[in-house]
Image (tube, rainbow, N blue to C red; front, side):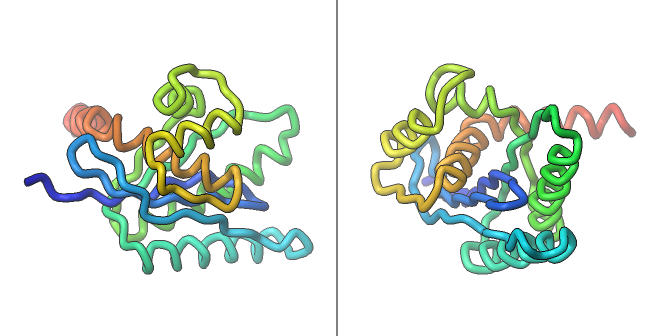
Length: 173
């Protein structure tokens, strides 16, 4: 019998960071939980990042994932917004990294292609396909649904990502 691997998917955002936890047993996906960590817009940037950090720490403590996956971000036209998103993404990478978890990073187009079958799609399609893949899945926001899609993407690509990391480590030595 194959043991379950618990994966935390994170959709980083400064205002809302979505998270989703799934268990993977072989090729079977099981919904565990999902939600959204919110930051207070009236707070200073450093305090908002602390809110995201603390929220993700609570998720890690409650669900104890073994691996994590984070969406890579594109550069926006607004450099300031891109920088702030990058800082939120840094928190999303830092929290599982501090626990020693392997963290996969996936481009939005790969996530969509993996989950909905095409590299371009909208939030409605992501929500629908997450429910098709895991009928018991619930989510309180598009960010949480996206985080579940990120976890699903990692579930399907984690073997390839681990192999690439091993090759990169050998080349770097």
